[in-house]
Image (cartoon, rainbow, N blue to C red; front, side):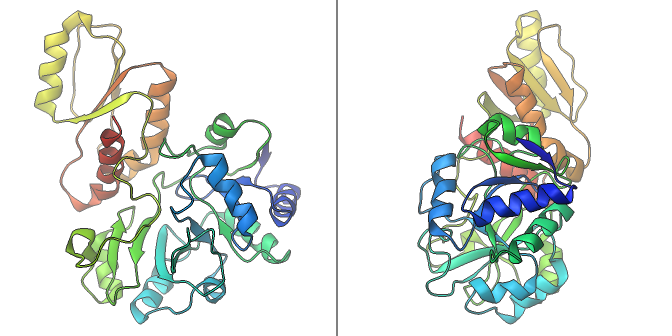
Length: 330
């Protein structure tokens, strides 16, 4: 059931459902989440069951403000506090040491917890209403089956989970890809998942070099959305450069079918059965459209999706990461 997220009665109904241990669909500026009371291990187990997600794969806990960080985190390093002050509310998740005995299921049993303060007004209104009902944070991974395409509209969530799930409609997500994740438990910030925020901006605010996962001496900690294969459409996705795309289209000619192409470069095909879509030139717009475009290709019934590889510039890191993971699932 999709409700208007801007209506106070919808917020109250969703908050009551969460306080009673139920799941709801939650809009954020990044993607829609499948939310439950982070303090209730029983409710959180419902998320894992609904998504088909392994129980040891941690979830991000969404909080209304920095004041709720201490409800879940044991400590906040100085550089992490700087990031909070600069980027919250917004599309940044911080991995912090978890308070003992708190949000065990949401953390997947790990000693760390991922926290984010979303900027979406519907999410903020719901978190405030939940706090008044004794719910101090919402565990909310993307509202899709595990490993599949993340939802960026309320309708996407309804398609995934049916009419029985209460979904707050907050409109299309403005960012369109999941939050940047920075691990703050290793003495220096470590980028676990790129997103909208630029690496240089994170380093400037933190006052420290932002390590990559490849620079870690110890094994990479488990964090949400960091599996090699993730965000996958049903069709097989392949990243290709312009020369590969043109050569493949020329070779297939009028026989090309069951194929969708998303590219920035102008392309032509002799086939009327080919689904060809122009990709925007800027990374932010591509990120906002990415998952909706992939869902649209799946809905069209194509078997193959060919995507022009993103440019090497840092602004494309988040988009590149999602496309590489989607291609790894093929």
